[in-house]
Image 1 (cartoon, rainbow, N blue to C red):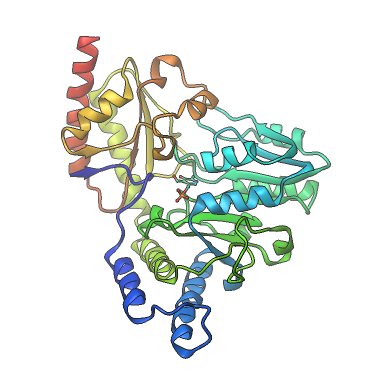
Image 2 (image 1 turned 135 degrees about the horizontal axis):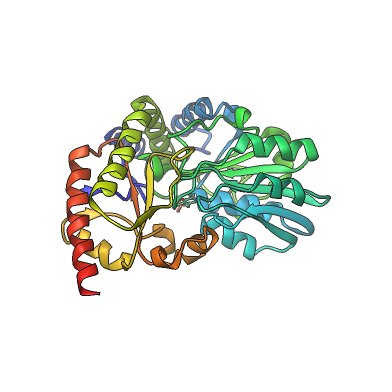
Length: 372
Ligand code: PLP
C-alpha cells in the first residue's frame, strides 16, 4: 500500500498506541476522582499538558482538551459571536471554521481576499480592520494546498490596530510539522487535532491565552472538568496525543518530507503534461501537494490509483469531494479544477513510493485523456 492521504489522517504511532493502552489498563480511573487511583489519571493529563505546552511555548494550564479541531474551532467562533460583533476570516478555511461562521450570528463576517495559492491579501486586511472587529480567525497551514500564512505579520497588523481583537489560528495541519510557538506567532487561540500528527482520532485541543479565558464559553455544559469543554476527559487518548506530538517533533522530518515534496513535483513535471500546482513553491507545508490535471475527473483518477493500492485525496476528506468552495476561492481555471488531487505525505513515505505513484498516475492520465 502507498498511503499519500496523511492530511486526511495519519497512522497512529506505536508509542501513542502503547500510551493509550497503558492508561486504559493501568490508570483507567476518572481523572476527576479524588482518590489516589484517580490521581494517576489526572497525572497523565498534567504530563500531557506539559508536553503540548512545551511544544507551543504556552503555560500548561492554557491547554484545553476537546474532541478535535472541529470542536475547538466551534468553541472559538461561537464564543466570539454576537449581533454587535464583526469577525474577519478567509474564504479558504476548513469547513469547521467556515460552517461555524455560517451558523453563528455576527453583525458581519468579512472574508479576506487571497491569491491563487491562498495567501491572504495583507492590504485587504489593513483596509477591513474597523471598530467592532472582535475576532480574526485564519487557517495557518491550509489543508488543501499546504499554503502557510504569515501569521506573525497578520497578528502585528491586527494588534497594532486594536490589541483587544482576538487572533485565532486553525493549526490542525501545522502542529508538529512547522513552528507553532504561540508567542512568536502572537496568537490568542490555536486549534489542533491529534490524528494529524500520528495520534488517535477524536481528540485534540485548544490553546487559550490566559488573559482572554473569560471570553471563551463552552459549547457543552455539564461537568466542570474544564472551563472550555465539559465531560469526562478521555485521558488515555490525551496521553496518546501528547506522546505522538513528542515523537512527531523528535522525528525532525521536515527536510526529509520537503525533499519528497520537491521530488514528486519533479517527477510530475517530467512525466505529465498540462497540470498546475495549487501549492506554492515557497511558504508551503511540504506535507501537502495539490495538483490540478487538465481534462481529468479527479474521482476517476483517484479510483484508478486506488486500484493500484495507492491512496490520495481529491480534496479534503472532510468535504468528501465537495471542494469547489476552496477551488473557487483560489480561482482555479475550469480546465484544471475538476482534476485536483491532493497528495499528502508523512515521514514513512519514500521516493520509491513516489516513483511508483507517478508511473501509475501517468498511465492513468494517458488512458483517461485517450478516451475523453
Ligand atoms: N481544520 C483543518 C485545517 C483540518 O484539516 C481538519 C481536518 O481535516 C480540521 C480542522 C478538523 O479536524 P477534526 O476532524 O479532527 O476535528
